[in-house]
Image 1 (cartoon, chains in turn red, blue):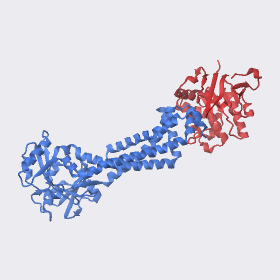
Image 2 (cartoon, chains in turn brown, purple):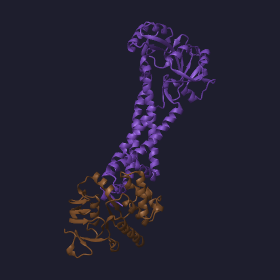
Image 3 (cartoon, chains in turn blue, yellow):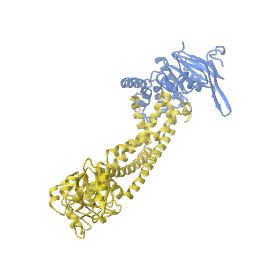
Image 4 (cartoon, one colour):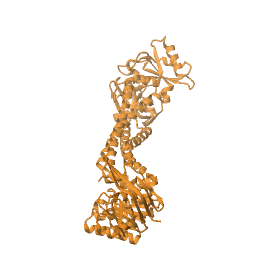
Amino acid sequence: MALVEIRNLTKRFRKGDEVITPLEGVDLDVEPGDFISLMGPSGTGKSTLLNLVSGIDRPDSGTITVEGVEITKLSRGQLADWRSANLGYIFQTHNLVPVLTAYENVELPALLLPISAAERRKRVELALEAVGLTDRADHYPRQLSGGQEQRVGIARAIVAHPTVVVADEPTGSLDASTSEQIQVLLKRLNTELKITMLMVTHDPQVASIASRRLHLDRGQFIEADRPAAHAVTGA
Amino acid sequence: MRIFGRFAPYVLKTLWRHRARTMLTVGGAAVAMFVFCFVGSVQEGLRRLTSDEDSQRTLIVFQENRFCPTSSRLPQDYARRIHNLPGVVDVMPVQVWTNNCRASLDIIVFNGAPPQQLRQARDLTLTEGNWSDFESRRDAAIVGRNVAQRRRLKTGDQFSIGEMSVKVAGVFASAVPAEENLIYTSLDYLQYSRGQELVGLVTQLEVKLAESADPDEVARNIDATLKSGPVATTTRRKGAFQTSTLSDLVDLIDFAHWLGYACLALVLSLVATTTVMSVQDRIQEHAVLQTLGVRPGRVFRLVLAESMLLCMLGGFLGTALALSALAVGGMAIGAEGVTIAFRPSAQLALLGMVVSCGVGIVAGFLPAIQAARTPIVTALRQA
């Protein structure tokens, strides 16, 4: 059984009188340890898919099952609990809380877990160490560079030991050199810590670090390294 | 609750981030709560004066159709006649002199009564001076704590006002706050003072009743008995007498409670505005928190906590300032020889804090709902 199972997923938006359907009847399986990159033109539903898998948006139809839990059936509160225990989210614009230090930002998701203060401290320190920011723990976001902020965002995404980490254009707001550092970091987290990742990107170079590269076009996934006949899904 | 405690630094730091806004809001709330507590203390003073046990179990005999103490003149002999009536335990003749019969914030009221009887009838504690000095000199006076504070009087001082000039033999505290606005002298002193011509006359008679006596029945009996005397009387419970004497002030004080409500409305709108602004500034931040796994209900409580903190901080400051001013100022308002003491009290402090907390909850409710209910994806897109 796949770690994440997406079946017949459809999402529609209304824009004035027009109905837009970025995802229609999408199927996808994500195996444990997968590092999947999603590419495709703007408006094809990549970020929408990420939001649905994260449980911060709801599909019009279809199901998403993560580790046996059908998250599309959960209430808003249950989804919040599920996210705190099972999901790490890396934002394009970092989205750190400006009044909290790097340490406190990383600690936020761990505050929601039923763990002791000592365990929480250990996890935060390990997460900061994993992204190489132990010496910046007491710095506020405004005192960090863009790359450092994103690394704090990554540490925050992994601190709760989530089942799956989703990243929405994690290098989209970074310069080339910093982007490369982040790519190396994401790859390392996947290979060394076996973290399952689902990443949306526009940049083919960033996509190339993933073990599976999917192209989403008109509601259909195509494995980048495979012929179209092996499409993952059909809309 | 434990998780909520873990988020306390986030709430505090968020308020500190916009310190100018936070301090202005807290300052505004403090000023409004200061006024609220002040109004509350006046109302509390009036309530105490007109509804405590002493005011219900003691009768005041006054000259019929007279209101200002300077115009009420009863024969002192009435005390003996009243004492013989059933249900009466004791009768204390009191001569009242005041520097101002109209409403005033700095009224000076002398009450002259036989010292021995006064000591038994009143629950007074001398904070300085001694009773024997008071009892041994006709021009000696014991001064209520509030008057002493207001007029900076201490034992041994000579205090003069109008035709009166007394030697301060002590300063007293009383279980009845309004008493602390009085100056007690011997009855003889007020009756024999130059220009008073009051020998054998008193302003009022204070009647202590037996436990089993019906105050209204005894009052009717007194008026009926003295109807045939040289001066007719009106006898009422002390509370009713004081309410009637202060009737103009009572209307004003009743009206002032609207001022208290206006202060609460001011705090409400101030804190609600600040909280709405804060929530709108942080729509994206709240969405990020929810993406990380913070439940909508918890976001609701975090916003509510911010608004409650603002209110309670302002409420605490305003209440503390008001209570300090009331404690130090020794303020009172009076008319026609009856005074209302503005006093700090634990009840007032508790009321101030409970009201602040309640206003904080109401002020934060709608912004908190807005923060908790905004769809996460929509909020995340608001850069």
